[in-house]
Amino acid sequence: MDTEKLVSLADHLVFTQTGKHLTTLQKTILRETFGNQPYSRIARECKFTEGHIRDVASDLWKILSDGFGEKINKSNVSSILERAVFAFNSPTFGDNTQIQEFNFCPGTHSTVPDSTQTPEPTTFPCKTYLISTPEVPQFFGRTSELDTLKQYILNQHCRLITIQGLTGIGKTALTLKLLEEIQSHFHTIYYSSLRFSPPLTDTLTSLLKFLTETETTPQNPELQLHQLLEYLKQYPTLIIWDDVQHLLSAEPGGQWKSERENYEFLCKVLGEVAHCSCVLLLSWEQPLTVTQLQSCSPRVKSLSLGGLGKEAEELLQAMGLREEDWQGLIEKSQGNPLWLKLMVDRIEKRFEGRVQEFLSHRSLQLDKC
Image (cartoon, rainbow, N blue to C red; front, top):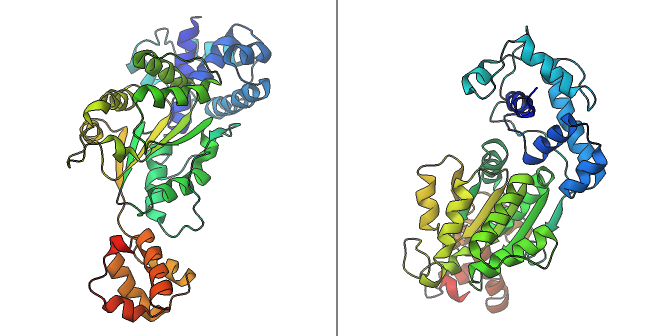
């Protein structure tokens, strides 16, 4: 039996059970299993530990077992998939229509999970690069924003997402809170700030050195992108690039700086080419490239952050402000968490805690707090 036909069958069954297609690693495990290769060899070829390969395979056998209604393991997966092909007289799995109509469990019906439900995570021995992330001592609210991002990443499998909003609005804090809740879904997590507007080759070189754990990387941007995509296809990866606004022109509209226009190609590749990973861009404004991609691709999304609402009251309460002073400060700060903190600091240092006196000074500007 053609190995690729069996992989296609397994891929479709996994999709009907989980709403996700097989990852490159899962497909590799299947192909090597069909060739009677031991886990140790698969681990060496894929550059993973044997324990990780066994964990990924175990999850795959469980999903297939649930779909077929019988226990599937490494020793019998090939024969069961072959039996399913013959039982349903479907010798040509290259025909997508036949695959879509194939029912794996007579008398049962597999359905794609409700998109409103967050899938159970596949546990990875996650490696992370979070050295340069700022410290976020407290986090308030943003429940709906967190739910939206989890839907985009875990259920809609978006490849490219921008989180945009004013300085201090909480983009980084939201992202770090998100990491706490979804990190088990990824093999690799990488965070980097682009505040110094690095050339694309520098950005990709730093990223690839971490991903591949080697000091030798291509210096040609196209070769770097090719190597990056191969990694993103094989290993579920979450990449976070913060301070993207420093790559954009000072003119409104989200245009790239003339000397950083090759980032446009990076965004297009990450948004258009199929892979099992996700890239988050944090910025004051959304790059025009992403806006254009979003209009034609369901795998490219954006989330715009406004000021805190009722959650701002929780922040002020935690800072020791009296309830009667909350509303005036929230209105003056437009619910921006950073501006609120700067205001409270100014009130304590310049006004000896007298909130109403601070609010009565119309000449005080937020950017001077």
